[in-house]
Image (cartoon, rainbow, N blue to C red; front, top):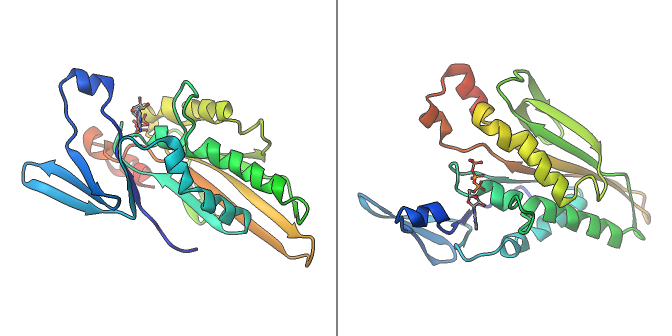
Length: 237
Ligand SMILES: Nc1ncnc2c1ncn2[C@@H]1O[C@H](COP(=O)(O)OP(=O)(O)OP(=O)(O)O)[C@@H](O)[C@H]1O
């Protein structure tokens, strides 16, 4: 707990990039290093782990499983994707539109329900609270998410989570409603999460955990769009 780990995922070239004759300029000589070809030579970056372009959604999720357990155990866990537009944040966090390759968010929820089901003899779980927040230019009000210590601008919805309410399809459609469609106009961030409250049958102790999963708006847009003042503050929130 309290530790921040930074992973890097390299995505394969897209069809259009291949069509344009682009080539990959990043490489990972080992599991912790990324090199990038630049006009000023090869640059090297270190990460806690690097996933190369052949890594699958399963490979990515394997490193996340113990964090889901931590949230059930009463810790506050936050997983977020950061990177420029088109780098694969949404693919990694949510998955593809065709629902063939679910990402971290649907897998995390599936896993959480599984852990809860397995532990029902030992713990009494309160119904999971499910929340979605997105930032947006239209919604200017600020909201402090005191429980998870995040400052947010935008709206937030919370409801009881069930397996069906947070199925892969629902998460994907929420995403495209909440984030993707608005991202061009509002450069929104999407935060989707769940709170877990459990009581230990043996000693009566109660724990509260939270899992926040975040698909941030593209990190480069401020510069590219020339956003200023209020707009920029909002993107940076
Ligand atoms: N690891 C991957 N394997 C195969 N396709 C990928 C992978 N990562 C991303 N893609 C594809 O690349 C495209 C861009 O990815 P994605 O939409 O996830 O980017 P993004 O970082 O969320 O962009 P934005 O900030 O604009 O929302 C999508 O068509 C996606 O399906």
